[in-house]
Length: 395
Image (cartoon, rainbow, N blue to C red; front, side, top):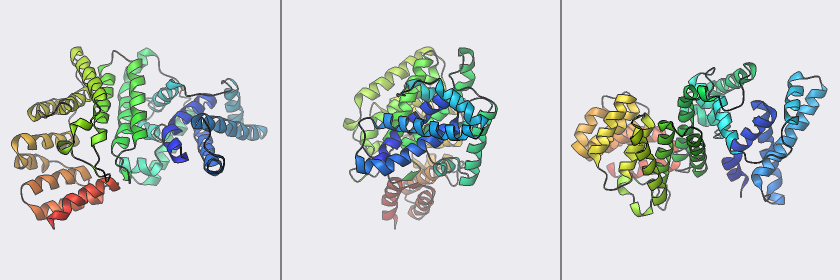
């Protein structure tokens, strides 16, 4: 297994374990990065160890202890405190499932602003670079770097505890925690940059966190709804790409390639949510994807569900997705009228949807310009190849 793959799969888990050991995010993150630097140098010559994750955690822990001892000798009280904290931890660290969830709840403390909560969790749990997170938030990289530094400083200075909150405190933390897990999944499902259409390791990480959260809060329908949504989306992954790696639209996918077990599990979770009678945005999105999972899609039902979603959580992106469904019921002209009312200029999916509607209406020159705008808005090479393939015949 390559160092890059281990990094993608284990970075977040390793950071979470080291935060528990040392009680400090900066120390944990630096130590894990040091461990991967050592791995890059040694593994090609010595071979990948039998337990790559354990090797990274152990190496990171040893590096952090060595660094803290040096700093403690210089009367650095912060280093002395962290070293004492490490002394209370078990000598050998393993993949403790709740460590990642504890770190998410720490990052989603109410003392932090929502953008900082999401950005910090994507950095620590998702292993996303500062540049990737900056692109997700549509801000310059230096701005995002400052936000991350301030967020970690606030956690340290406010002594925000590294633990799962008391049961009474869980509801106020739930919304940002759900948002963070879904953003990690989305970055895996359709990365904003790179040459891969899917980052499977991020999808798996998010689904694992979703299962943990649903187990922690089994009576919270939105936690169940998010897990159902991710499972239903993941069930279609085997059919999402053509042999060359370019995306395949839902309408063109071969349902025989879908993962039936994941789809069935997702649909059962949706039924559990419906029985609760407490609808929320993630549950409705899961219900929409449950309709898609049993072809042919009942587009009228999808539009009705989007109407419900717009009533609960209106946004231009939800309205855009609703317009796509309207196109299947009332035609591209009706959908284009809805899309043209949206203020989403610069969002590449908006331009791609508008381009497709214009193409279906025979307005090829306008469609070509919209495809160009969509191409300019995404750095994902697989997605760019798909857009170019749709655009080229228009010339």
